[in-house]
Length: 128
Image (cartoon, rainbow, N blue to C red; front, side):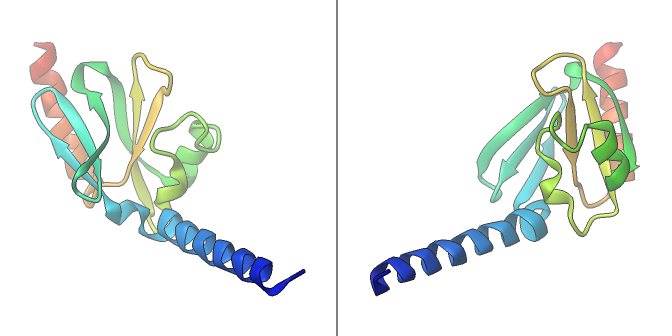
């Protein structure tokens, strides 16, 4: 093949390697969580809205290991955001939603126990 094609293949390979690095190792640092009275908002790069979960739509939530979350969500296929952003993390927050295409959400807050406690308190105030 000619040299231009090899350079294009090399450039694409480097690009994909960088994207995989960010997805696997830096993914959890690029997501921020904002909790208010009615929802959990998840943003990418602190600005871009990624998705949100209504507090009323949460069936249950708990702190689990990454491996348990992987098994319970069938390898992340039924979770949003996918488990790819959990490398380097030992514990995550697993949320089961009452309705929606994706029944589970796997979140990686800095302090999972405090996050679950905060959301549980909000769920009680919304349901009462």
